[in-house]
Amino acid sequence: MEVFSGIRQEHKAYIDRVINLFLPEGNEPQRKIYEAMSYSVLAGGKRLRPMLMLAAYNMFEGEDREIVEPFMTAIELIHTYSLVHDDLPAMDNDEYRRGRKTTHAVYGEALGILAGDALLNYAFETACKAFQKGKHLERIARAVSVLGKKSGIYGMLGGQVVDMEGFSERLTGVEKEELKRRLDYMYQLKTGALLEASLTIGAILAGATDEEIDKMEHLGGIIGLAFQIQDDILDVTSTTEVLGKPVLSDEKNNKLTYVSLLGIDKSREEVEALTKEGLLILKNLNWDSGFLEELLVSLVNRKF
Image 1: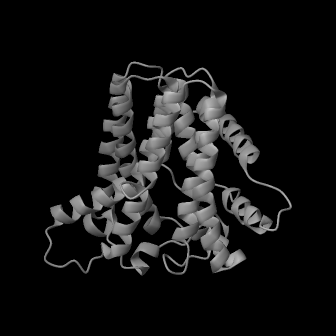
Image 2 (image 1 turned 90 degrees about the horizontal axis):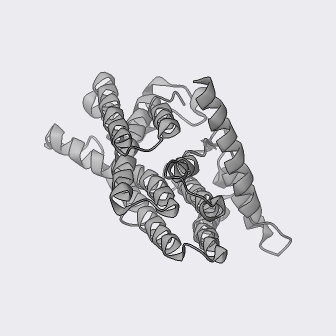
């Protein structure tokens, strides 16, 4: 465990350095947006998505990190933009994220919206810098396509729309199994899609086979679902101080969650079963997946 923690800390420090290198800076008239973007991205966070991407890239023995670095940054920028917009008054209306004021609470709602827009646009601008390396162009093009789909209407954004449309407990007369199916669908888009993108892009850029890439995508969906169920559990069992964001927000917004649908114990059983399924996929790939296995377990068993 100590070895894993040390490697994870090294990876996070490396990812933070990479992200800092790509963040915009300058004295142009629009420099306030650079500040808001940096405030949002550098607010902390575990860098889980770029870390998953790096772990997949390393597992498949990728040879040139300069190709994966723009994508590691891009996935974190997209994740951050989603949080910035999630916190807006029109969405979840949260004033704290990662233990400090949210972007719109500091810079105002208008700049909060623009900061999210800027992060999304800049993510693709950053990813496309991988083309400048002049090699593995087909892999890079495929990775850009995955990034677009998994962050858009067939991925994270689509899941957010489904969430905002109101999967609440006001859905009377609907069988529990059907509610669970709908909830799984939303979670696999809203949370799972970017984890799928992370693992898939890492595999693509490293030169994995199509079969291996498909399995990594499937793994991302499974872990994304487990991750979000654990989030539901933490929303009712943790504290604002530990999580760095408000707790009981799902209950406040009358949202349907695994905990409200199945209870805490059944939700924990689901997390355990999904984790076992994901680990089996990794083991059957027959690569050195030790770090990635421990990382996935740490994600779904996290306390904050």
